[in-house]
Image (cartoon, helix red, strand yellow):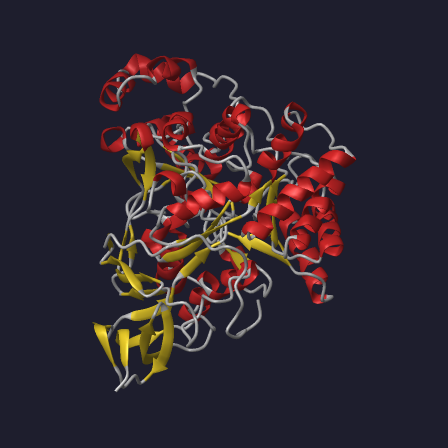
Length: 582
């Protein structure tokens, strides 16, 4: 009788292919799935999964754990929500390559773009590297709970080669392009999964300046993508302009098409369902990419998020509707209990509510006054609120200013009230997201784990998908099989990690065992576990009975076991077989 390291007995297997779930056993040996079905052999450890769902581990293609992976062995919150592989270095920001003289600039870029406090980076980053391959080596030294891959980030490469000219976004010379291409090729050969960049006006350094990669010329991006091909191939990740400077979707598409045609490399880009510049913008861009893909060219994958994208506003967090008002700024330094006492004084309240905010350096912090898409979050959190529950709509019904209602809600629970500002992906609800769910080339992602510590906690989205979209939603839903495929196999194949994402023999034993009936998402909370006592948002889930990485149990009933089997994934992985279209 065969013996296995682990046998999972009698669970509802949702295998990642999109096929109908079925009751089966899953056998694991040496970190791989070796049998799915009626397993006759015994395991050194056995898990009774009757009444539970068994799924592949989830894959998040868009995170920013570049710093957290240096100072922590846990890549949470992602790993608390069934994610067993993450990709970081997105949006072209990161910490390598980096000369000693440029450390402050790269930290200012991460602080502004990704809301990682400078003090946390100064305390947590070891800076025992200069080149990108050395950065990978340093990441590899520390074991982690889950696997992670890395993009070569555009902004550090630009600054490393061009210095102040690169930081100031001056055009690259032919010599600059050759040196940047050499560094990118070197990074991909060392194990990077591709190259990442951003072109959005929203991404700013902490001093308010645009990031170094902003508005880089087309020829620079084409050269970078060709360097990825020369290094062995990978994915190009792009945060496009998306109409924020008045350009149309054709401009974003033509840039991506030029990159695709020149390099033959796949692209994944952030696609947001926005009301601005028009609700038609993202639909036109999606149609252009779909037409491109149907011609058989190197694929362009729109990457979408499965709930609203925005910021959380709170007195404890980076921003709230009154952060930039003069009177609030005068008391913002006070500990929360003392600040709440001051804010409850009628004269202070009247002044703060009536004041216009001062100008702000960072665009994201100014968005917390969008009353028509601002909602009370609640506990459990409501990520698909009805339009009539917005702060603007409620205030109108109550005959008062939205500032007054928001102020009152922030003071709830002794100043711990949270407001969700649904900047993107909310168009009178979420029905429009089925345009993404049903697009065979689109991929779910954008959890942003490891970033926006005081603004969002979006890395909990797998739990939201499995609860809201498959079980709780009033209206159209996703099947459990389609939801699991979208969380596991599809992103794994898009990024080229074809050794994972399925519960099939020969695939990596990254596995979740879930109590679907008990699965629940709590409201975001604040924890003090960053270097130097820094604070961040965390979000817990119930119902994850077991999470396995490479066949090792890393969490039981939501509690980490202390096992650290996660490793740096160097380069793309060959596939056991290809199942279904991506």
